[in-house]
Amino acid sequence: MTQGQMPPIRGKNWSPDGALEFVNSLPADAAKSELLRFAAERHDGHLQLVAAVWDFVHHDEQSFDGEQWHEFSNRFIDALSQGLSGRTKVKGLTDGEIIPRRDSNLHLERRGDRFLIDISLCLRRLAHYMSVNNEMRMEWQRMMTRTRNLDTHLKEIFTVGMDTPDGSKFGGKGFRSTWQEACVAVATGLNRSPDNTPDSPYHGDYVAPMIRDIGLCLAMGDTPADLMTAQMGKVDSVMNGGIEGAGGRDLHVGCFHRGVLPPTAPLPIASVTMTGMALSSWKKNEQRFHVACIGEGSSSSGEWWEALNLAATRGLPISYILQNNQIALDTPPVNQSNVELWADKAVAMGMPSWTIDGSDPAAWHSSVACAREFSMSGGGPTLIHVETMRGCGHAHHHDDLYLGAPSGTPPGYVDRDLLSYWEAKDPIPTHRNLLISLGVSEEELAEMEAEEDELVNFAREHVESMGWADPETVTKGVTSLHDADTHEDHL
Image 1: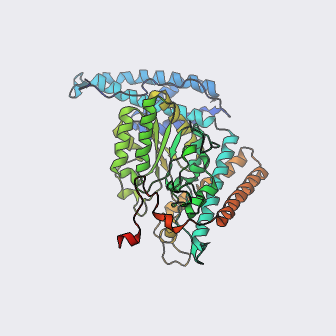
Image 2: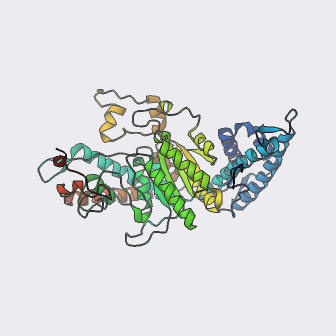
Image 3: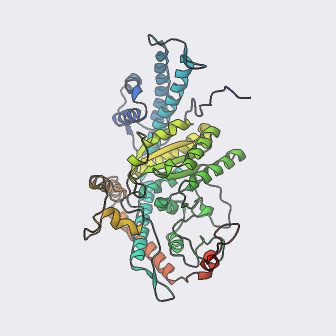
Protein backbone atom coordinates (compact mmCIF):
# COMPACT_ATOMS: atom_id res chain seq x y z
CA MET A 1 0.00 0.00 0.00
CA THR A 2 1.48 3.35 -1.08
CA GLN A 3 -1.27 5.70 0.09
CA GLY A 4 0.33 8.87 1.44
CA GLN A 5 3.66 8.16 -0.23
CA MET A 6 5.29 11.02 -2.11
CA PRO A 7 6.13 10.62 -5.80
CA PRO A 8 9.66 9.44 -6.50
CA ILE A 9 12.11 12.04 -7.77
CA ARG A 10 13.72 10.05 -10.57
CA GLY A 11 17.22 11.13 -11.38
CA LYS A 12 17.89 12.36 -7.84
CA ASN A 13 21.65 12.53 -7.30
CA TRP A 14 22.16 11.70 -10.99
CA SER A 15 25.66 12.10 -12.31
CA PRO A 16 26.96 11.09 -15.75
CA ASP A 17 29.11 7.99 -15.84
CA GLY A 18 32.15 9.74 -17.24
CA ALA A 19 33.64 12.57 -19.21
CA LEU A 20 33.01 13.20 -22.89
CA GLU A 21 35.79 14.02 -25.33
CA PHE A 22 35.57 17.66 -26.40
CA VAL A 23 36.45 18.63 -29.96
CA ASN A 24 37.46 22.09 -28.74
CA SER A 25 37.95 23.44 -25.25
CA LEU A 26 34.95 25.06 -23.56
CA PRO A 27 35.69 28.70 -22.63
CA ALA A 28 34.90 29.32 -18.97
CA ASP A 29 33.10 32.60 -19.72
CA ALA A 30 30.86 30.91 -22.29
CA ALA A 31 30.08 28.06 -19.90
CA LYS A 32 29.13 30.46 -17.11
CA SER A 33 27.00 32.52 -19.49
CA GLU A 34 25.05 29.47 -20.66
CA LEU A 35 24.57 28.20 -17.11
CA LEU A 36 23.22 31.57 -15.96
CA ARG A 37 21.02 31.81 -19.06
CA PHE A 38 19.48 28.44 -18.21
CA ALA A 39 19.03 29.42 -14.56
CA ALA A 40 17.21 32.56 -15.69
CA GLU A 41 15.06 30.43 -18.02
CA ARG A 42 13.99 27.75 -15.55
CA HIS A 43 14.95 28.82 -12.01
CA ASP A 44 15.29 32.61 -11.93
CA GLY A 45 14.85 32.63 -8.15
CA HIS A 46 18.18 30.81 -7.85
CA LEU A 47 20.07 33.02 -10.30
CA GLN A 48 22.18 34.77 -7.64
CA LEU A 49 22.95 31.46 -5.93
CA VAL A 50 24.11 29.87 -9.19
CA ALA A 51 26.34 32.86 -9.95
CA ALA A 52 27.81 32.86 -6.43
CA VAL A 53 28.52 29.12 -6.48
CA TRP A 54 30.21 29.44 -9.87
CA ASP A 55 32.51 32.14 -8.52
CA PHE A 56 33.24 29.99 -5.46
CA VAL A 57 34.03 26.78 -7.40
CA HIS A 58 35.71 28.32 -10.43
CA HIS A 59 39.33 29.22 -9.88
CA ASP A 60 41.59 30.43 -12.67
CA GLU A 61 40.57 28.04 -15.47
CA GLN A 62 40.23 29.90 -18.76
CA SER A 63 38.70 26.88 -20.44
CA PHE A 64 37.84 23.21 -19.89
CA ASP A 65 38.52 19.99 -21.74
CA GLY A 66 36.12 17.07 -21.31
CA GLU A 67 37.75 15.62 -18.20
CA GLN A 68 38.10 19.02 -16.55
CA TRP A 69 34.49 19.92 -17.27
CA HIS A 70 33.23 16.60 -15.87
CA GLU A 71 35.20 17.11 -12.67
CA PHE A 72 34.13 20.75 -12.42
CA SER A 73 30.48 19.81 -12.95
CA ASN A 74 30.59 17.36 -10.05
CA ARG A 75 32.20 19.95 -7.77
CA PHE A 76 29.69 22.58 -8.84
CA ILE A 77 26.68 20.37 -8.05
CA ASP A 78 28.14 19.47 -4.65
CA ALA A 79 28.68 23.14 -3.80
CA LEU A 80 25.25 24.11 -5.12
CA SER A 81 23.66 21.45 -2.95
CA GLN A 82 25.43 22.90 0.07
CA GLY A 83 24.25 26.36 -0.89
CA LEU A 84 20.64 25.20 -0.96
CA SER A 85 20.82 23.92 2.61
CA GLY A 86 20.74 27.45 3.99
CA ARG A 87 17.19 28.04 2.77
CA THR A 88 15.69 26.31 5.81
CA LYS A 89 17.40 28.85 8.08
CA VAL A 90 15.48 31.85 6.74
CA LYS A 91 14.21 33.99 9.60
CA GLY A 92 10.48 33.67 10.01
CA LEU A 93 10.16 30.32 8.26
CA THR A 94 9.07 27.78 10.85
CA ASP A 95 9.54 24.04 10.84
CA GLY A 96 5.81 23.68 10.38
CA GLU A 97 3.93 22.36 7.40
CA ILE A 98 4.19 24.06 4.02
CA ILE A 99 1.20 21.98 2.94
CA PRO A 100 -0.54 19.28 5.01
CA ARG A 101 1.85 16.44 5.92
CA ARG A 102 4.88 18.16 4.38
CA ASP A 103 7.09 20.29 6.62
CA SER A 104 9.37 23.03 5.38
CA ASN A 105 12.55 20.93 5.52
CA LEU A 106 11.11 18.11 3.42
CA HIS A 107 9.36 20.42 1.00
CA LEU A 108 12.46 22.50 0.30
CA GLU A 109 14.65 19.41 0.09
CA ARG A 110 12.44 17.96 -2.64
CA ARG A 111 12.31 21.26 -4.50
CA GLY A 112 16.08 21.43 -4.28
CA ASP A 113 16.48 17.90 -5.63
CA ARG A 114 14.52 18.81 -8.77
CA PHE A 115 16.52 22.00 -9.19
CA LEU A 116 19.81 20.09 -8.94
CA ILE A 117 18.62 17.62 -11.59
CA ASP A 118 17.89 20.49 -13.97
CA ILE A 119 21.31 22.06 -13.40
CA SER A 120 23.06 18.69 -13.79
CA LEU A 121 21.32 18.19 -17.13
CA CYS A 122 22.31 21.68 -18.25
CA LEU A 123 25.96 21.00 -17.45
CA ARG A 124 25.84 17.69 -19.31
CA ARG A 125 24.14 19.21 -22.36
CA LEU A 126 27.07 21.59 -22.57
CA ALA A 127 29.41 18.59 -22.58
CA HIS A 128 27.48 16.91 -25.40
CA TYR A 129 27.47 20.19 -27.33
CA MET A 130 31.25 20.46 -27.07
CA SER A 131 31.68 16.86 -28.25
CA VAL A 132 30.12 17.67 -31.64
CA ASN A 133 32.62 17.26 -34.49
CA ASN A 134 32.65 18.30 -38.14
CA GLU A 135 31.73 14.81 -39.31
CA MET A 136 28.46 15.04 -37.39
CA ARG A 137 27.87 18.57 -38.63
CA MET A 138 28.44 17.50 -42.23
CA GLU A 139 25.86 14.75 -41.78
CA TRP A 140 23.37 17.30 -40.44
CA GLN A 141 24.08 19.65 -43.33
CA ARG A 142 23.61 16.81 -45.80
CA MET A 143 20.32 15.74 -44.27
CA MET A 144 18.99 19.29 -44.03
CA THR A 145 19.92 19.82 -47.68
CA ARG A 146 18.23 16.54 -48.62
CA THR A 147 15.12 17.58 -46.75
CA ARG A 148 14.82 20.92 -48.52
CA ASN A 149 15.53 19.36 -51.91
CA LEU A 150 12.79 16.81 -51.34
CA ASP A 151 10.39 19.52 -50.16
CA THR A 152 11.15 21.59 -53.26
CA HIS A 153 10.37 18.67 -55.56
CA LEU A 154 7.13 17.83 -53.75
CA LYS A 155 6.02 21.46 -53.92
CA GLU A 156 6.78 21.54 -57.65
CA ILE A 157 4.89 18.29 -58.22
CA PHE A 158 1.94 19.72 -56.32
CA THR A 159 2.04 22.83 -58.51
CA VAL A 160 2.50 21.26 -61.97
CA GLY A 161 1.21 17.74 -61.29
CA MET A 162 2.37 14.31 -62.41
CA ASP A 163 0.84 12.67 -65.49
CA THR A 164 -1.81 10.03 -64.75
CA PRO A 165 -3.10 7.20 -67.01
CA ASP A 166 -6.35 9.04 -67.80
CA GLY A 167 -4.49 12.02 -69.23
CA SER A 168 -4.96 14.29 -66.24
CA LYS A 169 -2.46 15.31 -63.59
CA PHE A 170 -2.11 14.56 -59.89
CA GLY A 171 -0.07 16.64 -57.48
CA GLY A 172 -0.96 15.20 -54.12
CA LYS A 173 -1.05 17.07 -50.86
CA GLY A 174 2.17 17.80 -49.06
CA PHE A 175 3.86 19.56 -46.18
CA ARG A 176 7.23 21.26 -46.11
CA SER A 177 9.70 21.67 -43.27
CA THR A 178 10.98 25.14 -44.13
CA TRP A 179 13.24 26.46 -41.31
CA GLN A 180 12.53 23.37 -39.18
CA GLU A 181 15.06 21.11 -40.90
CA ALA A 182 17.50 21.10 -37.96
CA CYS A 183 15.45 18.30 -36.39
CA VAL A 184 17.69 15.94 -38.40
CA ALA A 185 20.23 16.21 -35.57
CA VAL A 186 17.93 14.24 -33.26
CA ALA A 187 19.08 11.08 -35.02
CA THR A 188 22.75 11.40 -34.08
CA GLY A 189 21.80 11.45 -30.41
CA LEU A 190 20.13 8.05 -30.73
CA ASN A 191 20.96 4.41 -31.29
CA ARG A 192 19.86 3.89 -34.89
CA SER A 193 20.27 1.45 -37.79
CA PRO A 194 19.82 3.45 -41.00
CA ASP A 195 20.76 0.48 -43.19
CA ASN A 196 18.48 -2.06 -41.51
CA THR A 197 16.33 -4.10 -43.91
CA PRO A 198 12.59 -4.84 -43.55
CA ASP A 199 13.21 -8.54 -42.97
CA SER A 200 15.73 -7.94 -40.16
CA PRO A 201 14.86 -7.31 -36.50
CA TYR A 202 15.33 -3.73 -35.35
CA HIS A 203 17.10 -3.15 -32.04
CA GLY A 204 17.53 0.62 -32.09
CA ASP A 205 15.61 3.58 -30.67
CA TYR A 206 12.27 4.79 -32.03
CA VAL A 207 11.10 8.21 -33.17
CA ALA A 208 7.60 9.52 -33.86
CA PRO A 209 8.02 12.55 -36.15
CA MET A 210 5.31 15.01 -37.11
CA ILE A 211 4.61 15.89 -40.75
CA ARG A 212 7.02 18.82 -40.35
CA ASP A 213 9.85 16.46 -39.31
CA ILE A 214 10.46 14.63 -42.57
CA GLY A 215 14.16 15.37 -42.17
CA LEU A 216 14.19 13.18 -39.07
CA CYS A 217 12.69 10.34 -41.12
CA LEU A 218 15.52 10.76 -43.63
CA ALA A 219 18.18 10.92 -40.91
CA MET A 220 16.89 7.67 -39.41
CA GLY A 221 17.30 5.95 -42.78
CA ASP A 222 14.15 6.50 -44.83
CA THR A 223 14.81 7.45 -48.46
CA PRO A 224 13.60 10.28 -50.71
CA ALA A 225 12.22 7.70 -53.14
CA ASP A 226 10.15 5.96 -50.47
CA LEU A 227 8.81 9.25 -49.15
CA MET A 228 7.97 10.55 -52.61
CA THR A 229 6.36 7.24 -53.60
CA ALA A 230 4.07 7.34 -50.59
CA GLN A 231 3.19 10.99 -51.18
CA MET A 232 2.20 10.33 -54.79
CA GLY A 233 0.34 7.08 -54.10
CA LYS A 234 2.51 5.10 -56.50
CA VAL A 235 2.25 1.33 -56.67
CA ASP A 236 5.54 0.38 -55.00
CA SER A 237 4.99 2.35 -51.80
CA VAL A 238 5.45 0.42 -48.58
CA MET A 239 2.79 2.66 -47.00
CA ASN A 240 0.07 0.59 -48.62
CA GLY A 241 -2.01 -0.52 -45.67
CA GLY A 242 -0.68 -4.04 -46.04
CA ILE A 243 -2.26 -4.45 -49.47
CA GLU A 244 0.31 -5.25 -52.15
CA GLY A 245 0.24 -2.68 -54.93
CA ALA A 246 -2.25 -0.39 -53.16
CA GLY A 247 0.16 2.53 -53.21
CA GLY A 248 0.92 5.18 -50.64
CA ARG A 249 -1.47 7.17 -48.51
CA ASP A 250 -0.22 10.78 -48.25
CA LEU A 251 2.93 12.06 -46.54
CA HIS A 252 2.19 10.29 -43.25
CA VAL A 253 5.16 8.06 -43.85
CA GLY A 254 6.89 5.65 -41.51
CA CYS A 255 9.84 3.30 -41.76
CA PHE A 256 9.33 0.89 -38.87
CA HIS A 257 12.33 -1.33 -39.65
CA ARG A 258 14.50 1.75 -39.11
CA GLY A 259 12.68 3.05 -36.06
CA VAL A 260 10.27 5.59 -37.58
CA LEU A 261 6.57 5.67 -36.75
CA PRO A 262 4.31 7.34 -39.34
CA PRO A 263 2.79 10.69 -38.39
CA THR A 264 -0.93 10.54 -37.75
CA ALA A 265 -3.69 12.96 -38.69
CA PRO A 266 -5.02 13.10 -35.09
CA LEU A 267 -1.75 14.77 -34.12
CA PRO A 268 -1.20 13.57 -30.52
CA ILE A 269 -1.78 9.91 -31.37
CA ALA A 270 1.87 9.29 -32.29
CA SER A 271 2.94 10.53 -28.84
CA VAL A 272 0.41 8.23 -27.21
CA THR A 273 1.56 5.26 -29.29
CA MET A 274 5.20 5.99 -28.56
CA THR A 275 4.45 6.22 -24.84
CA GLY A 276 2.88 2.76 -25.06
CA MET A 277 5.98 1.47 -26.81
CA ALA A 278 8.16 3.03 -24.11
CA LEU A 279 6.02 1.29 -21.49
CA SER A 280 6.56 -2.02 -23.28
CA SER A 281 10.33 -1.48 -23.45
CA TRP A 282 10.38 -0.52 -19.77
CA LYS A 283 8.48 -3.65 -18.73
CA LYS A 284 10.75 -5.85 -20.86
CA ASN A 285 13.85 -4.11 -19.47
CA GLU A 286 15.01 -3.28 -23.00
CA GLN A 287 17.72 -0.65 -23.42
CA ARG A 288 15.69 1.34 -25.92
CA PHE A 289 14.89 5.05 -26.00
CA HIS A 290 11.89 6.76 -27.57
CA VAL A 291 11.30 10.25 -28.99
CA ALA A 292 7.82 11.68 -29.57
CA CYS A 293 7.44 14.95 -31.47
CA ILE A 294 4.50 17.32 -31.03
CA GLY A 295 3.59 20.86 -32.03
CA GLU A 296 2.52 23.63 -29.68
CA GLY A 297 -1.05 23.41 -30.97
CA SER A 298 -1.56 19.69 -30.48
CA SER A 299 0.11 19.88 -27.06
CA SER A 300 -3.25 21.30 -25.93
CA SER A 301 -4.93 17.94 -26.54
CA GLY A 302 -6.01 15.71 -23.71
CA GLU A 303 -4.40 12.59 -25.19
CA TRP A 304 -0.98 14.22 -25.14
CA TRP A 305 -1.34 15.21 -21.48
CA GLU A 306 -2.41 11.67 -20.58
CA ALA A 307 0.67 10.29 -22.34
CA LEU A 308 2.98 12.62 -20.40
CA ASN A 309 1.29 11.74 -17.13
CA LEU A 310 1.76 8.00 -17.68
CA ALA A 311 5.38 8.42 -18.76
CA ALA A 312 6.25 10.54 -15.74
CA THR A 313 4.39 8.32 -13.28
CA ARG A 314 6.12 5.18 -14.53
CA GLY A 315 9.49 6.77 -15.30
CA LEU A 316 9.46 5.67 -18.94
CA PRO A 317 12.47 5.96 -21.31
CA ILE A 318 11.10 8.70 -23.56
CA SER A 319 11.58 12.34 -24.45
CA TYR A 320 8.84 14.57 -25.81
CA ILE A 321 9.95 17.26 -28.26
CA LEU A 322 7.51 20.16 -28.32
CA GLN A 323 8.09 22.50 -31.26
CA ASN A 324 6.54 25.94 -31.10
CA ASN A 325 6.62 26.94 -34.77
CA GLN A 326 4.54 30.05 -34.04
CA ILE A 327 1.22 28.85 -35.51
CA ALA A 328 -0.99 25.75 -35.37
CA LEU A 329 -2.56 25.68 -38.84
CA ASP A 330 -4.15 29.14 -38.44
CA THR A 331 -4.06 29.53 -34.64
CA PRO A 332 -1.25 31.61 -33.06
CA PRO A 333 0.30 30.40 -29.79
CA VAL A 334 -1.36 33.12 -27.69
CA ASN A 335 -4.72 31.55 -28.56
CA GLN A 336 -3.48 28.05 -27.69
CA SER A 337 -2.08 28.36 -24.19
CA ASN A 338 -1.32 30.87 -21.46
CA VAL A 339 1.85 29.08 -20.38
CA GLU A 340 4.89 31.37 -20.08
CA LEU A 341 7.27 28.89 -21.70
CA TRP A 342 6.13 25.72 -23.40
CA ALA A 343 8.73 23.86 -21.33
CA ASP A 344 6.67 24.79 -18.26
CA LYS A 345 4.11 22.18 -19.29
CA ALA A 346 6.46 19.48 -18.02
CA VAL A 347 6.53 20.94 -14.51
CA ALA A 348 2.99 19.73 -13.87
CA MET A 349 4.16 16.20 -14.66
CA GLY A 350 7.31 16.29 -12.54
CA MET A 351 9.73 15.82 -15.43
CA PRO A 352 12.78 17.91 -16.37
CA SER A 353 12.43 20.29 -19.31
CA TRP A 354 14.37 22.99 -21.10
CA THR A 355 14.20 25.25 -24.15
CA ILE A 356 16.44 25.32 -27.23
CA ASP A 357 16.80 27.41 -30.38
CA GLY A 358 15.42 25.27 -33.20
CA SER A 359 17.80 26.77 -35.75
CA ASP A 360 20.83 25.20 -34.02
CA PRO A 361 21.31 21.52 -34.97
CA ALA A 362 23.89 21.03 -32.21
CA ALA A 363 21.32 22.08 -29.61
CA TRP A 364 18.94 19.39 -30.91
CA HIS A 365 21.68 16.76 -30.82
CA SER A 366 23.03 17.63 -27.38
CA SER A 367 19.53 17.79 -25.90
CA VAL A 368 18.49 14.37 -27.20
CA ALA A 369 21.83 12.74 -26.38
CA CYS A 370 21.60 14.07 -22.82
CA ALA A 371 17.94 13.11 -22.44
CA ARG A 372 18.73 9.58 -23.60
CA GLU A 373 21.69 9.25 -21.24
CA PHE A 374 19.60 10.49 -18.31
CA SER A 375 16.63 8.27 -19.10
CA MET A 376 18.66 5.11 -19.70
CA SER A 377 20.15 5.48 -16.22
CA GLY A 378 16.71 5.61 -14.60
CA GLY A 379 15.96 9.33 -14.80
CA GLY A 380 12.67 8.88 -16.64
CA PRO A 381 11.13 11.14 -19.28
CA THR A 382 12.03 14.68 -20.30
CA LEU A 383 10.46 17.43 -22.39
CA ILE A 384 12.49 19.47 -24.88
CA HIS A 385 10.84 22.72 -25.90
CA VAL A 386 12.00 24.00 -29.30
CA GLU A 387 11.43 27.58 -30.39
CA THR A 388 11.30 27.73 -34.18
CA MET A 389 9.07 28.94 -37.00
CA ARG A 390 7.25 27.40 -39.91
CA GLY A 391 8.50 29.30 -42.95
CA CYS A 392 5.71 28.06 -45.20
CA GLY A 393 2.00 27.42 -45.16
CA HIS A 394 0.49 24.50 -43.30
CA ALA A 395 0.52 22.56 -46.58
CA HIS A 396 1.42 23.40 -50.17
CA HIS A 397 -2.03 24.75 -50.94
CA HIS A 398 -1.83 27.08 -47.93
CA ASP A 399 1.36 28.99 -48.83
CA ASP A 400 -0.37 31.94 -50.51
CA LEU A 401 -2.96 32.28 -47.77
CA TYR A 402 -0.29 32.34 -45.06
CA LEU A 403 2.66 34.09 -46.71
CA GLY A 404 0.77 36.02 -49.36
CA ALA A 405 0.71 35.59 -53.12
CA PRO A 406 3.24 37.36 -55.38
CA SER A 407 0.33 39.36 -56.80
CA GLY A 408 -0.61 40.61 -53.36
CA THR A 409 -3.95 38.81 -53.42
CA PRO A 410 -4.31 37.26 -50.94
CA PRO A 411 -1.91 39.44 -48.91
CA GLY A 412 -1.12 36.76 -46.31
CA TYR A 413 -1.54 37.08 -42.59
CA VAL A 414 1.88 36.03 -41.28
CA ASP A 415 3.59 38.40 -38.83
CA ARG A 416 6.25 40.01 -41.06
CA ASP A 417 8.60 40.91 -38.21
CA LEU A 418 8.45 37.34 -36.92
CA LEU A 419 9.04 36.02 -40.43
CA SER A 420 12.10 38.23 -40.92
CA TYR A 421 13.57 37.21 -37.56
CA TRP A 422 13.37 33.48 -38.29
CA GLU A 423 14.34 33.80 -41.95
CA ALA A 424 17.66 35.24 -40.78
CA LYS A 425 18.10 32.10 -38.65
CA ASP A 426 17.35 29.64 -41.49
CA PRO A 427 19.40 26.62 -40.32
CA ILE A 428 20.66 25.57 -43.74
CA PRO A 429 22.62 28.69 -44.77
CA THR A 430 23.57 29.64 -41.20
CA HIS A 431 24.94 26.18 -40.41
CA ARG A 432 26.66 26.08 -43.79
CA ASN A 433 28.47 29.31 -42.93
CA LEU A 434 29.42 27.85 -39.56
CA LEU A 435 30.94 24.80 -41.26
CA ILE A 436 33.11 27.05 -43.42
CA SER A 437 34.28 28.91 -40.32
CA LEU A 438 35.14 25.53 -38.77
CA GLY A 439 37.42 24.62 -41.66
CA VAL A 440 35.16 22.77 -44.10
CA SER A 441 35.95 23.89 -47.64
CA GLU A 442 33.50 25.37 -50.11
CA GLU A 443 34.46 22.53 -52.47
CA GLU A 444 33.44 19.87 -49.93
CA LEU A 445 30.09 21.53 -49.37
CA ALA A 446 29.45 22.03 -53.09
CA GLU A 447 30.26 18.38 -53.77
CA MET A 448 27.86 17.25 -51.04
CA GLU A 449 25.12 19.54 -52.37
CA ALA A 450 25.59 18.20 -55.90
CA GLU A 451 25.29 14.63 -54.59
CA GLU A 452 22.07 15.52 -52.80
CA ASP A 453 20.64 17.19 -55.90
CA GLU A 454 21.40 14.07 -57.91
CA LEU A 455 19.93 11.77 -55.26
CA VAL A 456 16.57 13.56 -55.07
CA ASN A 457 16.42 14.15 -58.84
CA PHE A 458 16.91 10.42 -59.40
CA ALA A 459 14.25 9.62 -56.81
CA ARG A 460 11.75 11.81 -58.67
CA GLU A 461 12.58 10.21 -62.02
CA HIS A 462 12.16 6.79 -60.44
CA VAL A 463 8.78 7.70 -58.95
CA GLU A 464 7.54 9.29 -62.18
CA SER A 465 8.32 6.09 -64.09
CA MET A 466 6.57 3.93 -61.49
CA GLY A 467 3.05 2.64 -62.09
CA TRP A 468 -0.04 4.03 -60.40
CA ALA A 469 -2.00 1.97 -57.92
CA ASP A 470 -5.24 0.29 -59.02
CA PRO A 471 -8.10 2.64 -58.02
CA GLU A 472 -10.00 -0.38 -56.67
CA THR A 473 -7.44 -0.70 -53.87
CA VAL A 474 -8.30 2.69 -52.35
CA THR A 475 -10.69 1.09 -49.85
CA LYS A 476 -8.34 -1.75 -48.91
CA GLY A 477 -6.38 -1.90 -45.68
CA VAL A 478 -7.81 1.30 -44.25
CA THR A 479 -7.97 -0.43 -40.88
CA SER A 480 -6.61 -3.77 -39.72
CA LEU A 481 -10.18 -4.94 -39.03
CA HIS A 482 -11.97 -4.29 -42.30
CA ASP A 483 -11.87 -2.41 -45.57
CA ALA A 484 -13.65 0.90 -46.07
CA ASP A 485 -16.94 1.28 -47.90
CA THR A 486 -16.90 2.79 -51.37
CA HIS A 487 -18.96 5.82 -52.35
CA GLU A 488 -21.20 3.43 -54.26
CA ASP A 489 -21.77 1.38 -51.11
CA HIS A 490 -22.81 4.52 -49.24
CA LEU A 491 -25.17 5.62 -52.00
